[in-house]
Image (cartoon, rainbow, N blue to C red; front, side, top):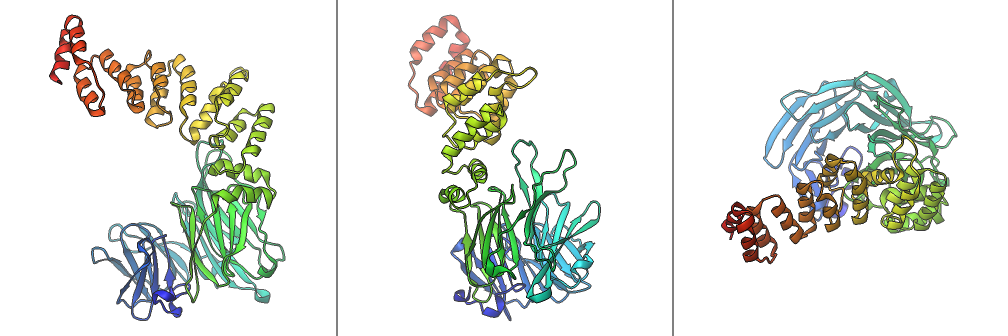
Length: 521
């Protein structure tokens, strides 16, 4: 950032903000500097006096400015002032919790300010006494908008920096104090569960305690059934990091990986499903003060103070599973990561696990191993293995269990689509087949269309069209009496037809159809 002309004094907590993977905003003495990372780090400066500035994470350039108790929001694209307000006490921390809500923290309370309408900021809760003397460094709101966590730091004994957090439930208006430095919410897809789990992932470090920190993963807000959670896992702190502490935690939901940055420049990568540490390394010798996830790629950005080094971290997918196997010696973690992220390197492990689970009679888990193996185990031989398992009374047949788990994770291949169609069509469950086709869960082929044809010509036509089986599609048009569609379809796909022969046949068997066909010529 210094190389782009941003002075050292502006590169620190409170002066520099980054709410998305697009803009870095820094407040200087008489101007606001905006760095657009999606536009080759293009720099734009605007003459604005403010103590702090923060860019909305949405597509529009909506910038909030504050000075003392005065807060203003501008749309830079339309050059409009959207809102302004005078708080009763200064804002000490703020964050966009969504594209439409700005959260502001004062010495005593937390406020939410909606971009919609002309409403003023609304006080949502008071700060917990445990945060009374803390410097606020974090505020997050859950995806369902019913939970939030406020975090701050304060000096402890022997040079240690203590962290305190306040977990708050908006519906019940209840707070739970936590001891730790960083937290974030995420929505995770849990194997074997239909509904996703909304979890809080947080770092816990007891004040003035020699015990090492732990990572917690706890589901919040679930009303039906037991909440998801795992045992807290000890975080491996290096010898030189006794007084180090996290400054941010960013979760990439699509990978279920959590990235924790520390003040000393260490990055920890955790598996958010199990709370296990996947990787730890020091990525910079400088102090890191913020980070933000780039959900589209699974990467995380970080910024260091003073020099303003901007770095981007991302897991090397090709090396991850060999690293977990050979360095961490954790086969269970390697198996789960490979299956969830569809990564190479665990093929032999997956094959052994599949055999073991089948021998144990655990059909569902064996199917999940196959689903996470890419194409390695998704073969006709595997289908045959599930077909050979005897069905138990009053239970779903093993083959259908297998296919239902594959359908949870994506699209069935050509052979799988054919095999799942056979029992479903035999049971005349036409709506289910229609649902799968609409959701693109099946791979269309001529063979699949042929299977469906005796049961539903309209559905078979849809399959033939997707599979580009032009001759079979035209046969469907004929069988359905849709002669008026034949010429336009054949022309659009470049399919050559003998219309003279078809007309001669229709003149005797279906004169009205012959007329419809002739109109298209």
